[in-house]
Length: 86
Image (tube, rainbow, N blue to C red; front, side, top):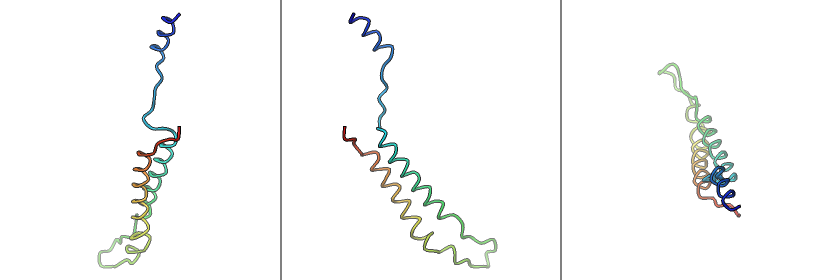
């Protein structure tokens, strides 16, 4: 009887993921924050090098976007270090 159970366990090994479901959710939030930060930085350039565009130095591009990107990277570190309560 034990021999059959041992064979079944060898045939169907349980795959244990490195991170839990909660970790992957936190990682997804971090990736979204990083992506949003980069999206906020897009644009602001000018086609004509003689024309200055003030939008290039807007608060959103200079302050908010880098803060979101850093928050995303911190969230990724937290997701890696997070231990589930189980």
